[in-house]
Length: 85
Picture 1 (cartoon, helix red, strand yellow):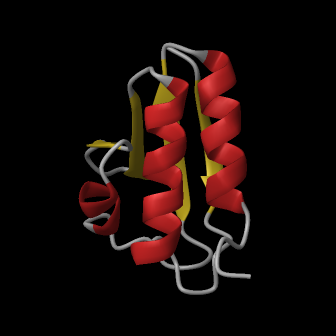
Picture 2: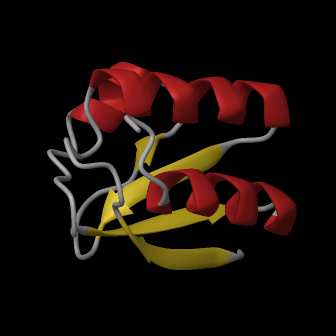
Picture 3: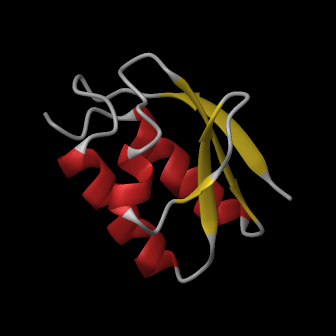
């Protein structure tokens, strides 16, 4: 299964606005995607609430995983960007 480890870029971490944008992109992709802090349990990236439970602050490493490599790249790019800018 394709995966990519990236660093959270949003200044506030993966909180409400960034989590909502990521969840919307996963829904748009139409394939299951998970996020996990390194060494932690994965959560459904299609749920903003579950993304927020990761407690991932700026600089935290997060693993993005899906059966679809394009979805992994798309979601990884969002996690790395500052979605609050």
